[in-house]
Image (tube, rainbow, N blue to C red; front, top):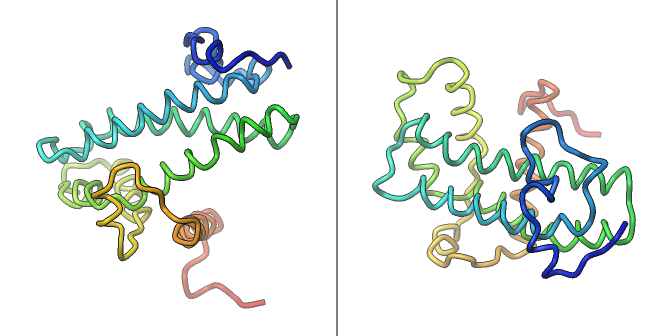
Length: 195
């Protein structure tokens, strides 16, 4: 894999960075370590902007309006990061590992912050379930279930860019993973067996 300098990597256009190409399936064979940082910079910035936009006081608490902004940005981030994670697992190189490890804290911080945003929770809670179709109702239920708060999340929200300590992040990540695992395998809370 040919490494480029950071300024060259940041100057890449959407057409030259396969992580920013959402026209079709991920272009795994074209993804290089130097694509990771500029793609994550752009996608995290877009996801942050989308979150701020939909949680603004004057933004309508309507499914269509919010999903057109937030879902698009987070789906793109998730898809690109999924491709990077997959390649890190199956085609590991020192360069790719370094690019992955450099981006991982920022990606984790965004998803953790998204799942603990009380403003977003208030928007979802303000939605009228009667105005949602079956698919939107299920997505709304999943979104509400995915929001997890800590006792100091309000203080964190008041300080944009504040870092969530590793010890605070771990329980949030575990809780989200455990919930998704249980849902995937049809396990209800009382069904878990000790072992």
